[in-house]
Image (cartoon, rainbow, N blue to C red):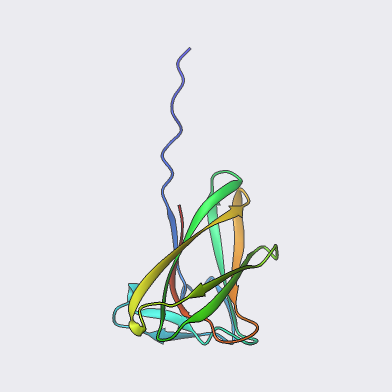
Length: 133
């Protein structure tokens, strides 16, 4: 009996400004140094960004990499499908024009999910892309 190895997983990248994402109060901002020339900003307080991730081949721990920009240290909170909140304290590159990456391990379901980005107690950094790998 011959078995074949599963196909290699291709990372899933979603642009924060993708029209399929949900923005409540958050806005698309032009950004010459960002992927596709824009990012999502004004996240914080009541304003949120929810990114739809599809094609996760199996439930389990995955690495989520967020490309963001900020001029001063800010807190970014995230939750998968309304689950527990993860809080990241991010310094950034101290510039709105220098993208920075942060990676965190998250439990994701198989198939599709929503990842909500917010900061209910202050301003969050602007987000450019989100990658699951």
